[in-house]
Image: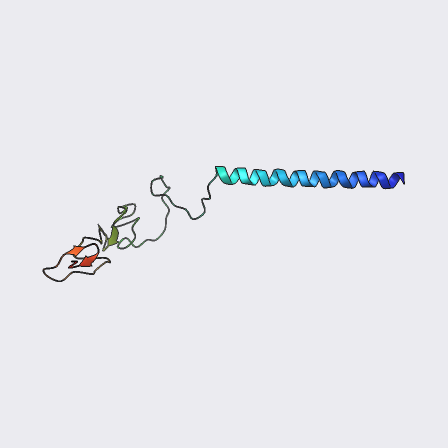
Length: 114
């Protein structure tokens, strides 16, 4: 009978310790997720980045337009190595190489709008 009581105390102590340890680990994970934002696959164009040696197409890549490291502005796309605004560029209206007809203008990404 005394051995059974000792066994029950040990089992309860172990259950309490496991529950406490589990709660502490989950709290640490929550604190870590609030402090460190996930960084896998995330790029930030305002933060300095180490140059990576990789192949890029400098005629169409917004982050390497015309030459490595030359970034286009937010509203621009890279067409033939030049940063252009597709909402107003007559030769690249809405997409690259979509020229407007003679006498029409590109406005809001459409030729002869209005």
